[in-house]
Length: 88
Image 1 (cartoon, rainbow, N blue to C red):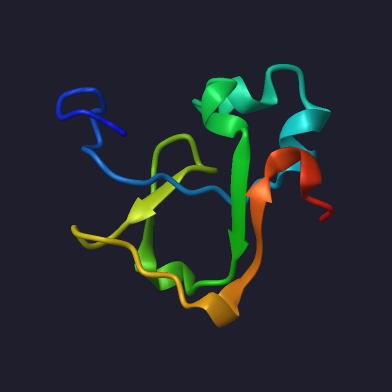
Image 2 (cartoon, rainbow, N blue to C red):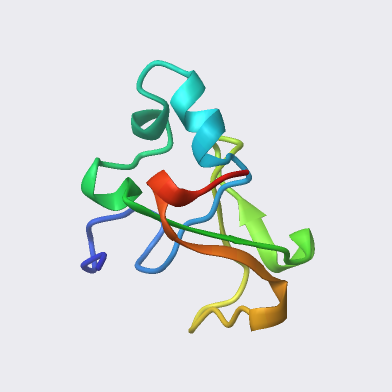
């Protein structure tokens, strides 16, 4: 959980279009996404309109445009679970 003040972009989820395979291809790929080992153990792959997100300076990190909970329809989820089990 992100504590208030821990992120200049506020508390909440952060998203990327990079897959676990993308991150694994680059040296420190997860670190480049701002993820620690503990934060990269699980992944959720889903489809959502780009219009719901705001792109941060890093270009591959996004946050929701609106405050509050993020709801992802189950029929839009193609994988949820351990990063090691993701098959692309």
